[in-house]
Image (cartoon, rainbow, N blue to C red; front, side, top):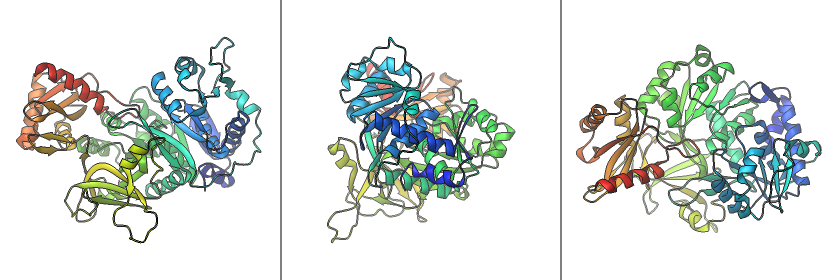
Length: 528
């Protein structure tokens, strides 16, 4: 099974079931099959060859979803690009993986024109609207409207022959240093991931999944693949305000919703409509640890909803999940391995850690991606032979060495300690930012926070808390420091608390720790 087969297979048994909804628009599985085939044929007519990359620079649009799966049907590799990225960032992605065709809006295409001189491989731009006659474009690039693309194409074109080890997509993810890197995902990676997640979430064709995370984020794209693997419906939503999410969940009678911690902290403070409380069968968290206070607030409101705490990395999609029945006993655990994956906790030499001993999380199995596009050096750092393999193997199995420090308890449940590059080292001690943040959140005085290690001439690094609250001031600062003194050893107590109107975010909605640390470092250098 390849990625587009998820839709084609479900259309055979449920042609008139809704596959996609956006506003008042509904696309059935039958319509989705017809349209994705037209997209595939249109791209082939533009000269896109098997294995060539197609950039999709759109918000959550029906056309974007059809483009992802149309690329798969036509043998191309799709590259989701977050619609909030600026021209220089988009240009980097287009140039880095030699995108030959770009699907976007007229407005975004015009904004990109000056940057496209850096993309000599780009041959075609498809815009959703009819492009104005006077629009500028590089001489080597042809401009085509979406309607012209699909009107001139036949829905009867057979799928371009590919196999499950072929590349399906490249997802760009921010790293600790340098520009975003492209994670290369095979057809097998994406289909195996969809089937694994749908299995433990218990997805069925009766589900309606509200998709609010960007599709350029692997967890966001998973909302599509898990739904289509069982014939469920996906509601496409770009929300303006957090309060729009519970309203949409009620309007569409959503049964599933995925989020990241900053979103959940905002949603936990809202009143959820009764219809949403009744319909939501499950919610999921990924992209970082959900604060226990946020989890408690959500569970108090969503009394009929199962909560799945998950951990994953783009390089291996999803790795672990905590069954909802374990929440009361292990609210801070990231769970155990998802189906069809093995998760190891190892020392630097690859030997297994004992229960309670911190070590690096290593993921092996069908979801391990193909590495970083055009970056053998960083690929070699992260993708290495799996530990403890039989000596007689002619070619070693490659696993993802996550760079994340975790511990495993006696029952095999995992707990996140921190990233190697996020860990704070102060006065010789290694400090987990997550542990400090939990105390800050538990105080109930802040909406969001991040614990960071800022260079300090005496301590090596000083623990600094950046937080967003509507109670900014000396009284709150003193209360937060006191809460840390009461709950943490002295070396973990923050040296300073800084209030911000908002914490910076990366395109996937996570707190941008690298940017925030840089801003605070400049501030503290002036003070020192």
